[in-house]
Image (cartoon, rainbow, N blue to C red; front, side):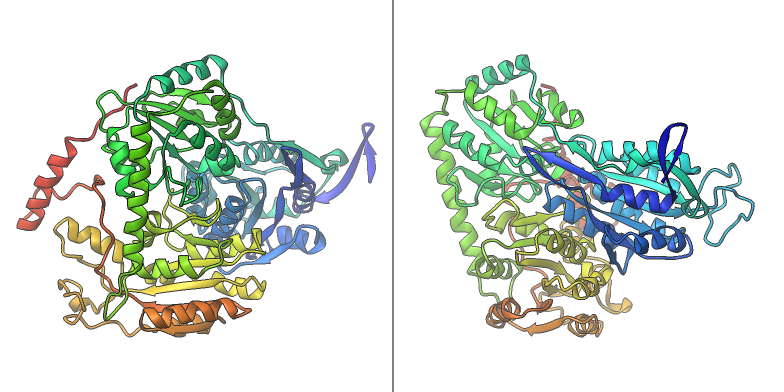
Length: 632
């Protein structure tokens, strides 16, 4: 330590200063304080090994985790911070070039879901005299562009540290965004490989412990009065519970609000678990992957109270779900972009405190008894439908719905289930009985294939005391399953349910619904992939890929199942095992869960030689008429 211009300084490399800074960052909400960075994932190359790699070796206070795939480690960090309600995260460092650009998809996934992750990719030489360096993307119009500029549109904050003295201000801006309830997402600090290793006399104060206080934003009082008037005037109000309910720890406040007012709830993908599945006013999933209970109430609702939702097209059924011509929206959201959607009465505020203030202002209010009874009847009827699907015993291969039911019934009530892409999310959204706010973990903002295993690792790191079930299809498994090795290396037990249905089941179903016969979606030899298969797939030659053996080769214990009963036994054995276990099962490719009066706008080809495609285009045109703009 030295003094310069009367100020204490500490001489460190840029990478050492960055790592030291991260170890001293804390967050506080509601009086609970904790470290913000729980560690750093990394894969080293020439672009970061002597900078970030050396710093992580020298400063073990920031725990280093070895990853297998750069995109996957961002997914793991994203799942970690989602499990931690955005109050803690993990940084990710890579080398220059493909190591860096591999993270772009992960960055998009984090930003779309408004989840904070810090990305630290290596970059080209700031001094430029040795350009072009290995893996450098050259752009003839400028020397100030690298592949890392790809991160700009998928980051909430982006900076390149070309000089050591830029680090201090960049780090403060990064923390501002990472800890913001409204602006959180991926933050990218591109680190030129020569600058990472440069020494500089940093102000010692930069490394003092810093607590970032997470405020609970309260709604404007005038807007609150307008919202109360709207609710009191409504005859058929409906709550749409989004991820903001869970992130703000507002589930208890939502339960109190629902029980006092009688307003029923439909849940988005991110919001599932906001209300226990067996609450009599929980209508379940809403929208394209919704239940008949939620979608029927949504169709007739004259007021929609959105809480922490961004109203994606799956939630609104491509803006056909809310059909009352005079429907109005009240949006409770810390993010102004989402709060103003659909011409809503905007309640810009934290979900928990806003619900608490609304409840006080609505004292004595409750919905009509007949409306409450209708919602309760539909909720009960939906539970019967779920049980019907759980109890299907399809042969020769089990259905996806009954396998979901087995996992739901047999898993520990405190467990966490994770999924992201394919047909599983839609069926899980409808069928999973969420028993606590973290029981259902779906990445559906980006619906990113390959998130599942990496996400399971991140969840287990954030909640080591809970069972973690990774639900993954063969498509996502083949895209990215390698973080299974990291889970084994770190002794983070996962139970992976690997469902093999010979291809892209979700897109196969969508293709058939568009009149395209599932073209290109079977895992079959290329001469067979144009063929429309029967239910047993007897007319195609399957590719002899052994996914169970693949899982064994990555170090997991594998249990192979061939029917429902052996699957049930496999789950029991997986729970008893002490190490990561993959339960492999083949399941029926064609049997699905109904759509329950929902619609999704995917336009069939306007011109086609296929009569089936022509028919689907005509049906689409009729449904397209139902879409509307909600203007307030």
